[in-house]
Length: 231
Image (cartoon, rainbow, N blue to C red; front, side):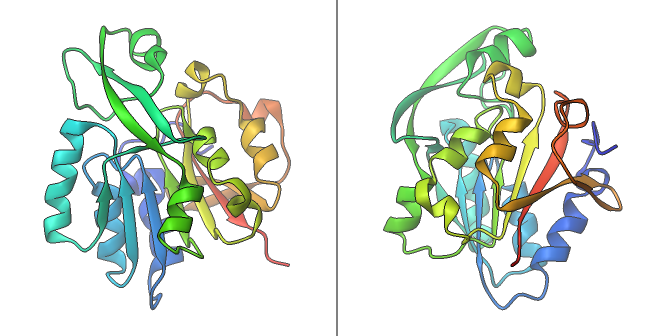
């Protein structure tokens, strides 16, 4: 249930979810980590043009396409990867299709999971904790993470910001890329104790009431949402 629903944003449940949490807001902040060419960010602003969107994309070729989206919609594009610590890293992609949506900080994503030769680029890595501080972002209404296996490190880079209850919703993928990064669903459960977990469905979402290896550790496409618990 809620596994391998990746054909489009209607089947995955993304569109319904975004309308549910973003439509009608008078403002707010959305951060799109792993923005690719900007489809998710564009969809967010189509639903609510009053939002402030920051979109991160490290791949130099893909970022050029993302910048074209910025010309038509009001969001800020940042040419950087996001991780647990700031620095420089290798970003791997297909040697024969450099600029794909599968680019990852893990070479095994390309070579072991997709069984293809890889090429790589040196890219800047930033942390969301530092970015939020430098840009005076005090609340994030939605954090979307699609980083081909690096999702947990993105959360780690938030530091104390993650514990302060200032991120309303976190939307991320859990799939076979997590085999390359050696990350379990349990790791997300542990780092987000103040959140309720849901798996998106085409017509809604199902709550994961408790951690279960059998039900959670499925290394295939899952659209997962973590919602901040309200006291």
